[in-house]
Image (cartoon, rainbow, N blue to C red):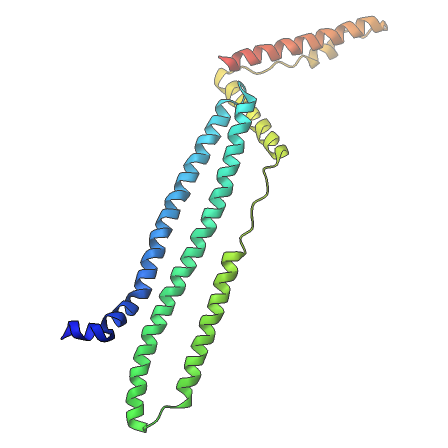
Length: 227
């Protein structure tokens, strides 16, 4: 008999009942995929950051390219996080709608009981149904607004990349100096301690010696970082 009733719409009714469940399952599957993508993008950002740090002194172009890829991954990550938020809102909306649907079914049964008691349907039931319809329409508008309000990210700022390159260079320099225990010796104090003479040629010679010493210190520092 159950098969016969299925021919007359019983199967369609069961399928319709499972529609919210299937929709939630589909959304959760997509949500899991986006969460895996979020983790993957974060790993890629970490890899590109490591490449930039590795090449900060030996290959500035490679370091900048790595930072550029990192920025692209950051943009994709922002979009993925936005999509995850949208799916989570949609899942919550469908679950709430399904609860409302089940609640309405129970209330309809209660209404039938009241109908048997009073012999007619009250206006309050109609008002309640219309209120729920208005709530669902408002929810649909909010979902559409959330989906269409995502903005496309701005292009990578080259000045920002240069600033990050300089910060990474300084960080690498400080780390190397701490590990080697060597600190650049300032020669400005020695220059100030030289006897003051009126001959401008001697002053120029002292200034030239200071610049030569600074160049020597820079070459030593670069040699240490290259090791």
